[in-house]
Image 1 (spheres, rainbow, N blue to C red):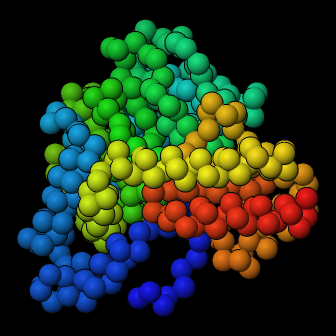
Image 2: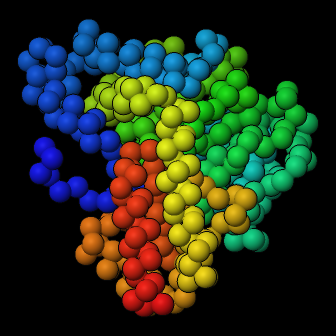
Image 3: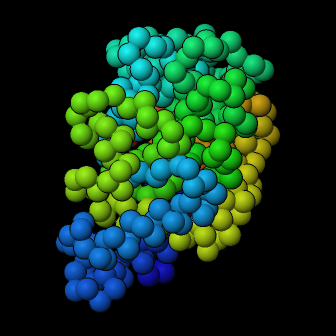
Length: 364
Ligand SMILES: Cc1ncc(COP(=O)(O)O)c(C=O)c1O
């Protein structure tokens, strides 16, 4: 195993998975725990799969301290489908919902909600090129069905350090796709959290939804079944065939996190990795420039610029030769982006900062 050459993988998602998780999946590939078949080949109604999905839910509940009055669902359609399902299910006809827009993803979420009904944007960071977060209380419509925000903007690299301040009676709903499981979260502050798995929680193909049960009373009659939270919650995510293998992989990642010491332990490691990268930016004399305002910086996604586009292109090329992969920035921000998710080894973060220093020495 150790002879395999793994890339320093800075992809934004799908992203690096822990080596030990991949090894476990490999070991169980042909014969999952003596049942003579892979998880990909077994019935989603089998005892074995029942064990897989129930254990994944139990481990997630333990890691995040999810209160018992919350449902956990493993759904399909990615976080993008949640942008639409959320207003379809939880914004009653005629009501409006408030959106905090801090980057591309919350902007897309608000646009999807806008296609389906009344949507107010109560903070918009676009004029500041999505480098900032709201500070202080927001003006929330007291009648709003909910307030939606994105905890970590994957493209712009801005991440909330605490929940936005909104009136307690208004449900707070969060897209946590790109910093899910990166740090402890007080789930009771949220009415609903959703996260595509493919950054921190597993492979693509499954989105985790954590929802306070009372919200299910809002679900209107006659939604198509696969868009109906009530149907999906009440069937334990098994109304139809779920993304079995992705759920199994999420389960392995959750076990890995538990063995590591849970969310406080991974948070500590994430802070160390982020400090390494931000220090490299801040100590470069302006050669590397972080996109996000320092107080809004993400510990998961670090977009940054260099003195010219030519240098940025050369950086990506040279980095690739040095086995540092996935550093090209999103086309809407340009430049570079290092995604430093849970499973990115510390050695990879160190390799990046060494490469940055060396590149500057040669080209700066
Ligand atoms: C914060 C955030 N929300 C939503 C999405 C969309 O996720 P999906 O591709 O799973 O629909 C992404 C994808 O990168 C994301 O980073």
